[in-house]
Length: 86
Image 1 (cartoon, one colour):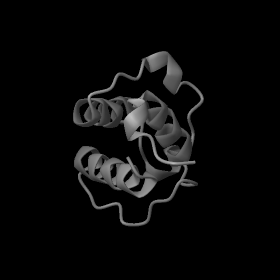
Image 2 (cartoon, rainbow, N blue to C red):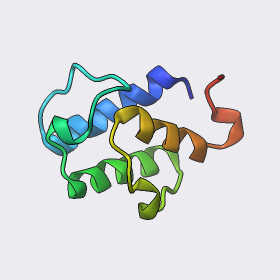
Image 3 (cartoon, helix red, strand yellow):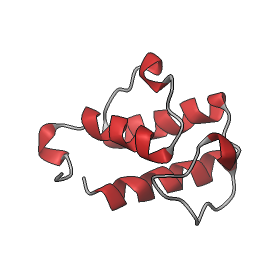
Image 4 (tube, rainbow, N blue to C red):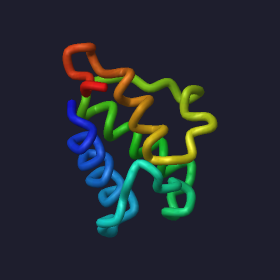
C-alpha cells in the first residue's frame, strides 16, 4: 500500500473517531496535539486493523507520538506484497 493511501485511510479513521474533518495531516503531525486521546487512538488503530486485516498489539503503540511513527508500524504489519517501496 502506498504511503499516501495509508495516510488517507488514517485521515478517514481519525475524522470518523473525532467526528470532524482533519484536512491538514502529515507524517510529522503529533497525534496528541491533534486532540486524540489514548482511547481514541485505540479506536483509530482498531479501524485500521479491520480495514487492512492486520493486528497491531497495544504494547507496540507505546511511545508512538507522530502519524508517521504509527503509519510506519502499520506498514510493517501489512503482508510483504502490500508494503510500500522504500
